[in-house]
Image 1 (cartoon, helix red, strand yellow):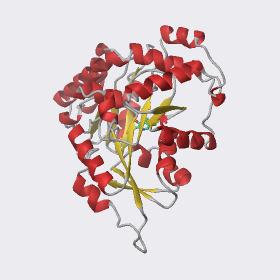
Image 2: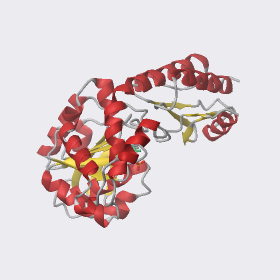
Image 3: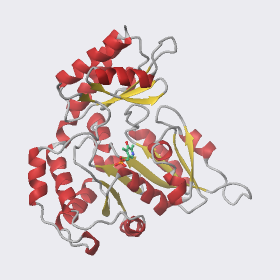
Image 4: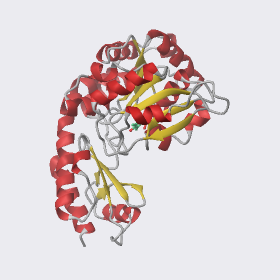
Length: 346
Ligand SMILES: *Cc1c(COP(=O)(O)O)cnc(C)c1O
């Protein structure tokens, strides 16, 4: 049997031979002494790309989010974030367990308005309210289908945040995709935020790693929280070399993933009675819903698709996500769409 077409996530990519070669050859040292040349190079380069004073390697995007929340809040605080944000849905309650904060989810479709932010922000020093101290934006927004948060909305949200004395955090695990899709440079996307997280292990195709960027003072705090959470590593240059290689060789090809997601979505919509808003298909993620009239539910569709060589994820009882990435070709995306259409219109 041929290998399945794996659209479960853009995290399933394997390092290319060229990436493995630079990893094998990477100069390394003990990163906890600040002596890993490859990690130092990556951090300096990313700080510059994101337009921030400093940057800090983290093993995962989840830890980057946890460290950011811990750095920018105090236990008992409240964080305002978009509905179904990764920090609220995919981190096992880590915001509560590690930072001691609760997340107030607002808006819809991965976006929220400044009015919704104002309404959600609790008055300070009121006897019974938690203090709202942070607003988080996820760009692109995963569960909303990879939508890009429009930059004028980002600017107005962060403007209101400053007025309300809220810190700002960008979960930009897929910020590269947001930049490729919108044509807005990474440093401009990052500029309005105190801390910004990016991931190398998603569309960029590295085997691991995320990074936080921000002011020198915040990065110094984040460094302490990283160590406390057990995320400080040693000869990390092997990973950093992969990330540097990914920036040089995989960043420029993201539009291919976006075109493939579009192709998949258009074929699905043309052939099967699914609910799919094409306007949400802006990057490499396709989220679609099965109408209640359909006898199949999402887990069943995933099982049947797997038997036919296509892997997708159930994101809810009637919601499915497919993600394109550098290990699936345009032809494979077309075949995957055909398999899903045959299944869903049967
Ligand atoms: C994947 C993801 C993360 C977490 O990254 P991991 O490396 O899987 O822990 C955080 N935020 C968003 C938006 C993501 O999609």
